[in-house]
Amino acid sequence: MATNIQLLKDGLKNEGLRYTSQRQIVWDEICKTDDHRDAEDIYFKIKTSGQKVSRATVYRTIDVLVKNNLVRKLELGDGRNRYENKLDSSHHDHIVCIQCGRIDEFMDENIEKLQDEIAKKYQFKIVRHIHQLFGLCRDCR
Amino acid sequence: MATNIQLLKDGLKNEGLRYTSQRQIVWDEICKTDDHRDAEDIYFKIKTSGQKVSRATVYRTIDVLVKNNLVRKLELGDGRNRYENKLDSSHHDHIVCIQCGRIDEFMDENIEKLQDEIAKKYQFKIVRHIHQLFGLCRDCR
DNA sequence: CCTTTAATGAGATTGAGTCTCAAAAGTAAT
DNA sequence: ATTACTTTTGAGACTCAATCTCATTAAAGG
Image (tube, rainbow over all chains, first blue to last red; front, top):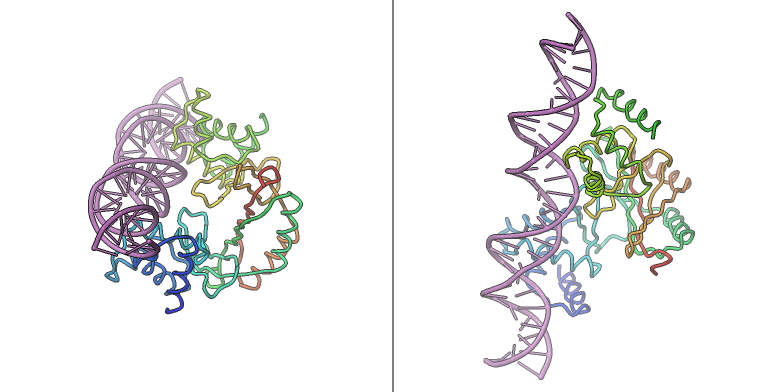
């Protein structure tokens, strides 16, 4: 986790933000897994581990991490955002099982290229995209 | 609007649901435009037009219409679902301006095919998908 | 240290959406 | 039409994720 501390410090410094123990705790918690967890999950994991970070600070810190490109926000459209650390994974989209909640990741260069073409056609400058496939996974179908 | 009434009646009958004046009012309101409006918009348009349908009924009716394939639900991941009538448009995805809120529609057969391949690769049976591009439109960039 | 300014915590607030349950209204059979 | 049955509706309470407020605490730099 040593390098993660530096990543956080650098990210914060770049934005003129302060390095605090609470931000470290939240970042550590997010780095602990490769899951796609929501803010409440992260908050309660921290809480039950005995560390003290308020809910507001967890939400605020997650926003900071998202803005600093350390965390990716996942909007599944179910009124609950999920987050994953961006450390060891490059850009990808998600394929979600509507039965068991399993989330796999996919990436397709051709789709990315086609998206660029669509953007050009509609004269948009794209800054992000959401691409999610919902269905039944192998075990649930 | 004459055919729309029949569409609604048939859709409801197929599901063993009752045809009511409230459902007609909501369906009419959704058919009035090709916009992508949220439930509150639709509710307040009805309210200010002097017709009386409760908020709960608007939400419930929209769900009924979505389930009956008369209305498409748009999840932009901003905690507010939008809806559009499915009458005169076939399947499409959306390209959204993060500045002015403009929403254009796109459809790309190749992307659809690539999605099918991804589903096959991950052994998912896809039932729906979300694909949205966010950026700045021609006027806002 | 001291000062300045940002960050935090606790709890109130928001906002979209859902739930409850008594009253109202469709529907089908008589 | 009347009745009997079942679904739908309305009003407002409630939920849940997320944000806001503001007094207090703590970084960071001189």
